[in-house]
Image: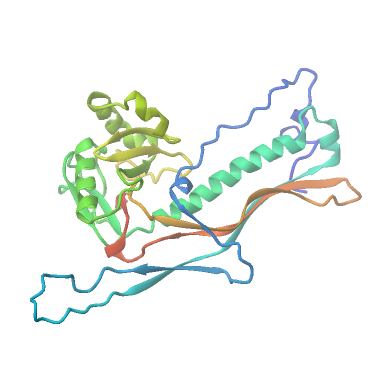
Length: 314
């Protein structure tokens, strides 16, 4: 039986000792970040199949113009694209024995409940990140060695040609934000874009921000989990659920700049903790987390992309 056992110290035996602390401690755990930036869709209606679809409507093909009094009203049209995501089951479980549960100082259910919740949080955040990563808009430092501290190269096929060789600076951020504004990408909260990456990616930028601007007191209520600052109409968030991409030059790591309507999460059954029906005459037990739903990038067409990835070829 793969699971928690009384007979093996590091699988259960350590859950009792004469002087075991009453405090329940677990390994360090990050909070969700990418999932927080998804738009939630209710997909609970039964019998609708595993595909969840939505329409994307274009602008009119020909814009309006001034009219001559005797000229007929011009006519135009618009196109409709359909995007989709697949509903998937996610989950994990930890079996344990009744003997372990009875003899342990810490409640098996309490410990397993906590570690399963941590696992669910990380698993679903990685699933959301995988959709952010499908954006067609990528960028990296300019220059022959992709090492410019000020200029940025943008590409629209999702495949960066340069190997990123520079730490992200405030000048890079300015170029990225200008690019997003020029593409008419709607801000994530009506005022600001978002940027999400690992803490070391924003280290140079955080140092720059310390000398430039801080939140005013009235703005603290609006700071979200993981938010480290705001600059150039962009709110910066850190995450550690998704591992480093370990770029060749190692001076930075991936980050996603984004506006509104980025990734959709269709929820059929929200994540939940479930207990296994006892087996072997009550001696075999278990707990699991379970979720049914899916994540999908909202716009797969480059012209409508809302996410720009700070990226690297290797």
